[in-house]
Amino acid sequence: MDRSVGLPLVARRDARLLVLGTLPGVAALTQRQYYAHRQNSFWKIMGALIGFSPDLPYERRLALVTDRGVAIWNVLAEAERRGSVDANIRSPAPNDFAPFFAAHGDVRLICFNGREAQTLFKRLVRPALPEQAAALPSAVLPSTSPTHARMRFDEKLARWREAFTSA
Image (cartoon, rainbow, N blue to C red; front, top):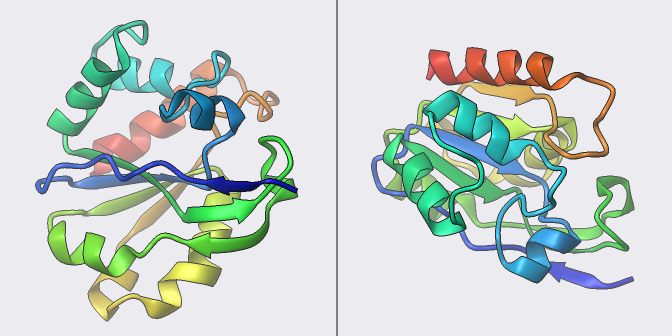
């Protein structure tokens, strides 16, 4: 199995909402861009929520998202994984979240991009967090991954919109 190393945090100091995936897939790691798989609906959802075209250059999309107080990261810093499927993750190592929460005190909500991100966070990250960060509200949102195709796009968008409205 290959050892996958994640992407760096994308955030401004004034972030209010943290979106966490598990670990970037092959396309994202190859392109060094979050949610780079052409069938992943993350950027389409962000575009609909924030008001931009998902076809904008990557750096521009990142700027628009962070301008709206959204931080993007992954629960895992690295893991062994064959392909891009979360079920294939072995030997996970989490990102160090304590410095993130210390530097980003305005975060009001953690949004997990799929249930596996929440499961890994609860198991590997939350026990080591300071009490205030561990108590932050969270929402498990439908995965934007193309492997999560049983839910229609408009249903996913409605769930993501509900979480973004509450933050």
